[in-house]
Image (cartoon, rainbow, N blue to C red; front, side, top):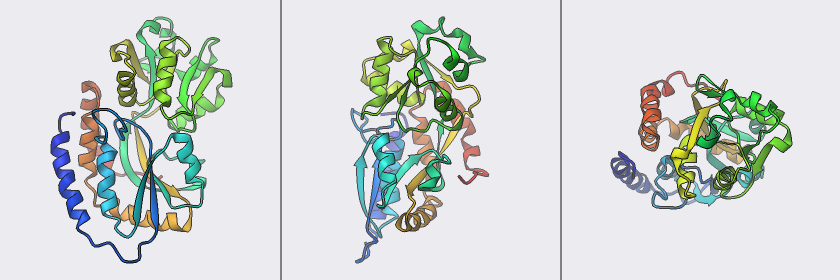
Length: 294
């Protein structure tokens, strides 16, 4: 367990006990379905750290502050989750990036979390071959897609942020390997190990976690931010844009104002590698100042 998680779990236990002591109204507002993806270190489905992700710890507190609803948690992959958010049910996802396309059918909360941005992972053995695309410690994804032998792995229907999403839309389809499965990232890393992909997109802590699960040595991988992207990405809770979903979002936004988000950020930081953790914690106070609405 990462350093700091034990203290946070104690705080979590006390908060959930307090929340659980609230009376549930006799007439609940309906069932609110929470969609969770296997997205270490935010949500962790398997292994010795199962349930110890930063959002794994936040969600019970959020649920405890919404006693007027019955709550159901469902584990889904990204493609299934987006499909369910399009359906006329009371469905919410606690870890979404805002995009204009999603905003057509999803109502978004105020800022819920801040994560280190998505980037690209290459194998150390490919470092020299791909050196031309690495400038000032950043990877030029646009130039890479223009190269004759370029193949990048990504998770289907996932947003990687505005800059990366635009690069993916412009890429030739044969240069992009989209995976829809439940263990999409693990499968993409195996494809990369076998030489079928040059690079894989994702969050570095997530990639490190799945690499270890796949028996891939993390020291054999190198991670680079994408040229043109910001160092951090703001995430939001998103609910189906229905009358029920909009009503639930009003309550969720009220609750977010009172949740210990700074503590959850600390929990997330415990999963980062030392250099990334130092930068994240140094920049952490700015995450909560003048936060733009989506």
